[in-house]
Image (cartoon, rainbow, N blue to C red; front, top):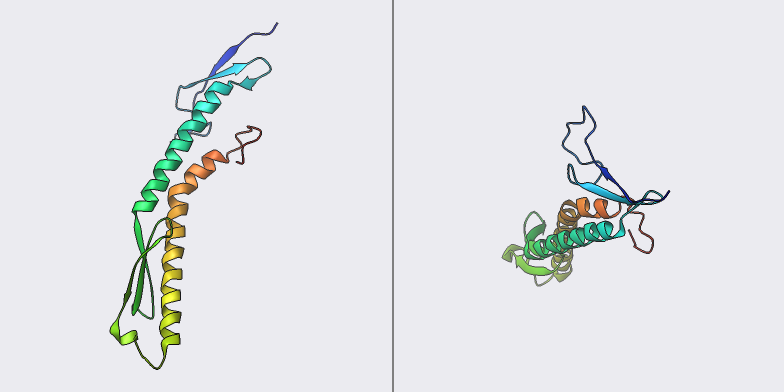
Length: 144
């Protein structure tokens, strides 16, 4: 006899670490259709919420600035969390008209350092969201 059932999620006794291993809100009901398959409507709503959270985090990254430097601070670069170069500061001591190659190397190194810091920030902001998306959603056709 086929019927639609529901399953209320509960925390395991003694699991007080605060994490939510089942990716549902405490007490949230997970609707299950015959054959033990989760309700697609509910999965789509969860995916939409995660997409909104991801968009919000990406916007925050675009508005956050991080710095990188080279030559002991002679050259400083500022990029957004999304990697867009916003500012470049060069100490006059770094400018030698006879050696522009060193200055160019310092600029490249400072921008590279700033971009590495931006990548670290991206991982901090987007990592938890990406793990949520890649947490074995089991939805065919989705790249995560």
